[in-house]
Amino acid sequence: AGMAAAAAETLGRLAVLHAKEERFDESLRLYRESLVLLRRLDDWRNEIKILNRLADVRVRSGRYPEALKTHRKALRISRDRADSAAEADTLNHLSAAYFRMDLFSKALDAAGRAYAIRSRRRDWAGMADVLNSLGANHVKLGRPEEALESWCDGRDLARRQGLKKRERRFDRSVKRFIRLHPRLLCPY
Image 1 (cartoon, helix red, strand yellow):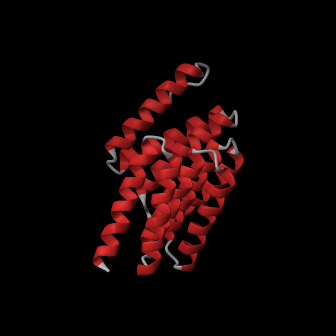
Image 2 (cartoon, helix red, strand yellow):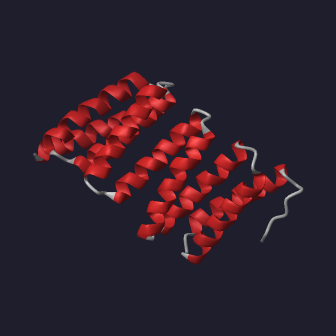
C-alpha cells in the first residue's frame, strides 16, 4: 500500500510538470494512472484532489465537457463522504473552469456556494480567495461596483486575520482596477 501511494503521488507530480509544459495528453494519462492507484487504495481524499487537477488540465486543453463531468464526479465524492473542505475546493475549481469558459454567472454561483461552505468552517484564507474570484467574475459581468466591494471585503478579511500575502494580492487588484475605473474611488 505504501508503494502504491508513493507511486500515485509521483505520477501526480509528473502530471503537473507535463501540464506546465502544455503536454496535456501526457499529463492527463499520468493523472488517470494515479487515479487507478488511489481507487485501489480507497484514498478518496487524494482522489478528489487528482480529479480536480485532471479537470483543470482538461479545461486548459479546451476539453470543457470532460472537465465539467470530472468536477461533478469530485463533487459527488466529496458530498458522499460529507467532506465540506473538499467540496469547497472542488467548487473553487469548478468556478475557475466556468470562468475560463466565459460562463461568468455559473462561475459566480459556484464561488458563492464555496464561500458559504468556507464561511461555515471559518476558513478565512479560503474565504479571501473566493472573494478575489468573485471580484474577477463581477468585472467580467460588467459590475465594477460589486467587484470593488468583493475585493475590499476580501482585503478587510485578510487584514483582520493577518493574511498578509492575500492582503497584498487584494491591494494589487484594487489599485489596478481603480486605474481602469477612475470614476470609482478607492475606499482605503
